[in-house]
Image 1 (tube, helix red, strand yellow):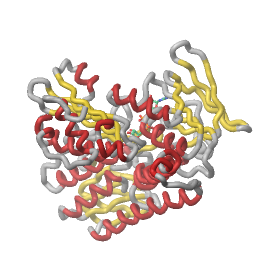
Image 2 (spheres, rainbow, N blue to C red):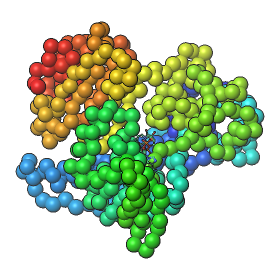
Image 3 (cartoon, helix red, strand yellow):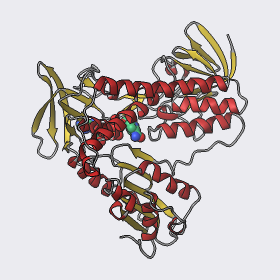
Image 4 (spheres, rainbow, N blue to C red):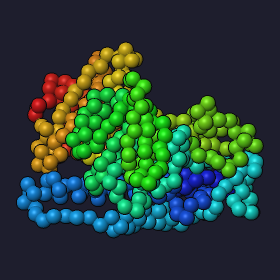
Length: 461
Ligand code: NAI
């Protein structure tokens, strides 16, 4: 038996970041992780491998669509097993990096799956370890859908979609959320006929509606087909592939389509199986998340929860920030997360990014706001690199000019958004961004132009 100040359950972005911060603040820390490698869903079967495949498939797209115009000639083909090997190498570099950081910070990795027999104790295999504080950071898993039985070969979740034996001729995606559109894009660029079936009458729920509409148009131009307002009922495996049946919500008519592979991407649910929460009396919310107070305390003294298992967006960076905040709290500091400034990014091409309120939310709140918009068509750098699709939309308070939100679709959107995150964190006005000198020629100028458009007007539009 060994005794720790903190034992963290789960080595995903929430858990491993929390462990590093705990160790930096002088707490004796261990992390329980049952996977072969550290990094959780994000590094092993989520964010990181999907970004490798998005990058590779985007490069292929560029060779096919824009290389010729630049005088770069010759046909580029691709080798799927090699592309998967590149993806696996990327995973290895990152999971290995976390292992290195554990050693550097003297964090113990307790290999295995944890149970919590009682507060203050964590059991891994046959060993029981003592901990003053236990932080549950066990993440999430794909939510099942009635009538769709996942085998991770032909009916897959994101995990199986990153490991397909071959590129399917026809891919059906259930759900036009982040996973469906990122992975749908990958396979569309690699030559699959991709059909996305979505329950709602628009894609990407929660996104600013104008951005969502433009995003759908761009994806359609890239070859994705959308069936909106369609509730999937079942997926049946046959000799020639899978038959996906859905009901059109408008007239309740039934329709089906044939696919070689079906990707189920209808959301994720908190994962805490096997921890023994029932016996401990840890309370759950109505939605099955671990209930916590604002400082991540569960209903049981000494047990905390962060990341996907508790409320809030299921995003790696939200989990990371909660991981740092709980570490600071356990070390006697005032850890805190600003939930009003958590960016969201979809890593398609172009990328989509947002932070703060959407226009729909502001309308609902009855708030007086102004909109500053700037199209990437007016950005010299974007035009030079075949990336002039999309726009920046900045929302600011009509009276005070304070930035309330930003929604953008365009080149490097996932990086550009952070200028606005910092501005919002400092309570900046659109004019503060507009008066900040931005280097030319950069994509960032489009953000400044949107800020100028909140005032006397953009220059290049
Ligand atoms: P999601 O919640 O983003 O989207 C699921 C979609 O499925 C919704 O549009 C929903 O209306 C639709 N749907 C539900 N039931 C349906 C049915 N029966 N028939 C047709 N459509 C149906 O979930 P997703 O894409 O699976 O992602 C899960 C989580 O992982 C999300 O919280 C997401 O934020 C996170 N994630 C984030 C990424 C990023 O930040 N880039 C990348 C991948 C995942």
